[in-house]
Length: 319
Image (cartoon, helix red, strand yellow):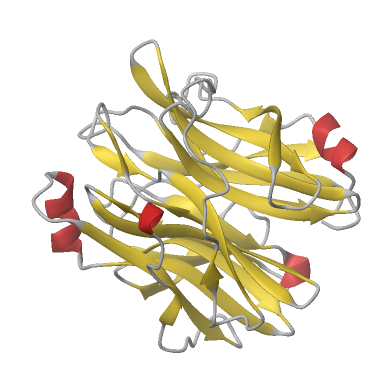
């Protein structure tokens, strides 16, 4: 991504790929969500690799074309929102570690408080993984809320010997959905990849009632270093016409810490006759493949807890 300019991203015309959604809920889960990918150029076997979560944990699928994926393995339960990285030939998978599923279900009805932190596991072959260990734990008051403590949505950016993990934190209850979404976005830094992270004293991004795309809560943020600066791709949660929504927006930054709104990338809408992204488009991962940018994301058709389903698809643009 570092050979791409900010203007190229701004001018990119993202269109939903006609094969979307490329992955739908399976095995009793209502969701497949938060895709994180390795392109063929960045994997040891020349395949696409996607990591994502369902209700029951984090899964690893692979593909020859980045469209048709097959299951490789379930990596771990009690886990969601993965972020995969290949560094010096070794793979590092960061994720949100939760309590067991039973306690997560009780949190939906506010019977117990949520608790989650960021863990990391490592592999040399994407198959055998080390025991997960904590990477970012609860050290700041703004990570806590009435509904519990949440540190989630890790995304790693490495620069000048420093590892920076962007993450979401806090919990905001979204009434029409019946569940919580992240309140703030912050970051932690370390000289080591898998330990020693110290969190910033204040969030980078917080809800803003005057922001049409951020008037409920902050969602998540993915940050990329480009040739002439940084971009952030964020999905904020917002209220419009009495309903909650989520959209994917493009931010720009000179330092990777202070961001300015640039443009809308993907809004919730009907995809032709398909309603899979009608009300929410969520967490994304931007990758470059040959002369094309692919923005993988998950989306939800409705806020209704019973009818709602989350699927994974992607938008693409030539550069």
